[in-house]
Image 1 (cartoon, one colour):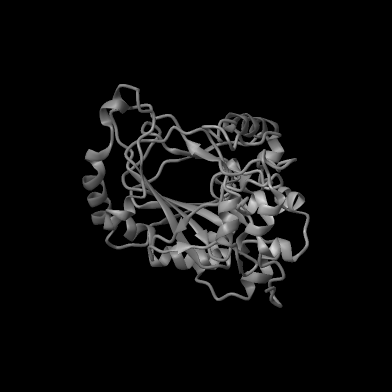
Image 2: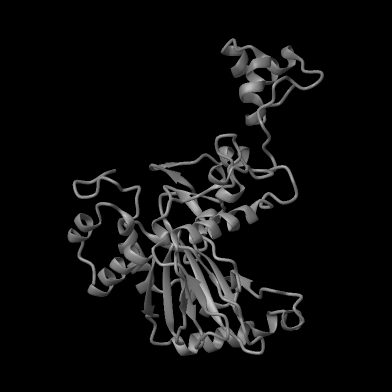
Length: 353
């Protein structure tokens, strides 16, 4: 519910037009306030990772995961990107970094809702990834309640694939499928096949607004916090014989609906809800809309691949009497069986007989 101080609880505190009013009412550490102002202005902030045991954590992660990467494919150019997703499930040190209590407390203070990690990615080399925003991949409603924390597990310079980002781009609108004018192919083998259209749009935006890239030459133990809508990517790795060990943790905030806009067309029906697990507790986090949990049957009913555009007629052999017998509530409501199936029964998975 809106409070006397924050009339916009559906906007992250750090990005709210009520920023000054909200943070004046908070008792946050000076470091958090400094991060808040940087994140608000530039879309990112650099800190030293707050764990005195970081060097041991980093070396253990590197040693444990090193043999699991496809090094041969990388050096032969067959595997352009090396990563391990969700290593927190098997490597305690990865989970310890993701669940660092100081980071969780800081993010919760910045956004005004409890933060929780939901995904980890571990890299031994640079991603060399086209610049993008996480908002098309890891979004939510209300929007922007997501952020990332990237941690350097070794020194990174211009030769081994530094991060690249565009300061201030987080303040742009969140662009999704309706803005590029393409719906995902929710019935096809690749609902994300239209992703290159986003890349073209981001390139045009950068060119039109004359946005300038910055490169993060990190020291081991430095961490970059970035906002969901910040344009960022990975610069080319000039020396393929070097490593670039790092860990990314993605965070959501409680009380939101979690979904992937890239694979969704909400006004036609398909919504690619994300099954989100809190890394800290190992428990699934339900999607919540203004305090109300989204019913599981609705999540299932709107899943792309299972959803198609509204039918215009009943299926061949439709028996109105059998439909009413199988659905006594429809009969009790004296609804027209054919019309009910077209408008409701199809989506609800009602039995035909």
